[in-house]
Length: 225
Image 1 (cartoon, rainbow, N blue to C red):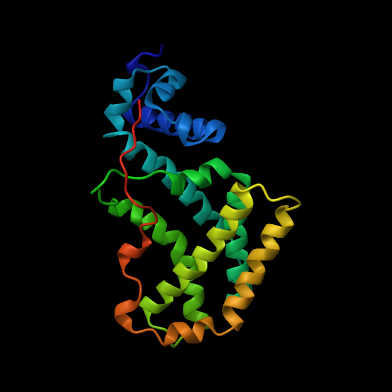
Image 2 (cartoon, rainbow, N blue to C red):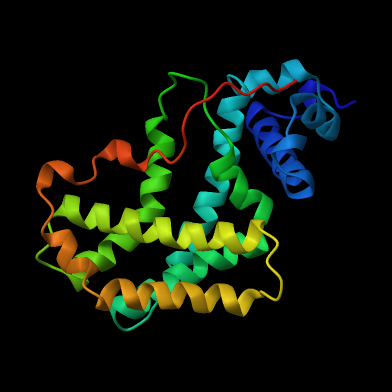
């Protein structure tokens, strides 16, 4: 077992995150246990709690790594217009989901304990991803208010996420990655051209999305040991 003095706290924190992410890749949320992480890095359970306040804090940081990676790939999108950028941004999202299924699933499977607040630093990570879609809708439909753009992006992403969940987590015969991408592109084009934007512009402001809408999971009380 490694001696604590061999690594700084920052190094231990990074070791924990890398090990936790590897466990998620190998077996999903069910493998993400503090004892598994401790064994993997050669430190005690207590050492992990020197750098993270609890397992929920640790898991949020693991999830943040996935969100950062998605956002970084989205920043590389350089399509010439907003509609094509939406397609490419959605492509980044679905490729990450299909190529990193367990990491993608963790973002939505993990639930905070009842009554817990989503930390502001983590909320910013979410907003950084979803805001990239919101920005394109503000270009496509400049008459929408900021809240309406936010609600539009939420509805749009709900559709993309639903397609990913259906095709990646449900055994449907004959489906492949092309079906996934083509379904998302169809959703985008119908979303933009079949009057959904006009319907959104008719919504009253008090029915539009608030910041709390972006908390993408209910709360529950997980057990980690």
